[in-house]
Image (cartoon, rainbow, N blue to C red; front, top):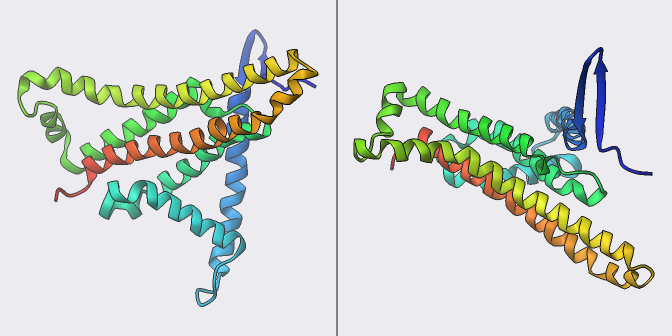
Amino acid sequence: MDQISALELHFGSFSLVIPQSILVWFGICIFFGIFFVVAGKKIEKQDPTKASKGLVYLCEEMLNLVLYVIQDNLKEKTKKYIPVFGTCIIMMLVANLIGLIGLQNPTSNVSFNATLAVTMWFMIQGNGIKKNGLLARMKELTEPMILLTPLNVIGELALPISLTMRLFGNILAGSIITMLVYGLLKSLMPFGAIGLLITPFLHVYFDIFSGVIQTYIFFTLGSFFLGQQVCEEE
């Protein structure tokens, strides 16, 4: 049976098409919504004098992963931003790895990536303005000399574009290459069965290694630029 590529909803003359990638993301959101509620109750009941295990231990390792990504960039502000970065990092990691079970990666949808990148950009700019004021933020764009203002503005606007296209390109390329390899092996059957020996290595690189690395890069860059705005200068 072919996978559902999109969900079409019709409201009179209006039609709404929701791609599979977005449907998968909705599913991930629902899963983690339930997961965090259950995990929160488990953590509240956890005896601090005993070693963590099960779901509580898993949450501790997830926290360590998040701290590894953002702590060096956000320094003393890390605790404040753990909820938003923690949620996004874990959910994007799952979104990048979900291709392993045959579902379309949400991050292979450029609109999804752009939404996340623009949200990150607004958070960076908003927190910078909140800390120092609008005039101080605008003054930063004129440094070290006013002639460089256009370049500084372009540099600021390039961040969401860079985050979007880097993530989109790597995840989509992995999906396409894997699909092409499976299509080639299918056309070469029964001799193509030998080629199935190499497909696990493709998944290790494109679905696991690349997915993890792209999550790390996305939020390392995001937390770095946010840290420049909200952290105290050393």
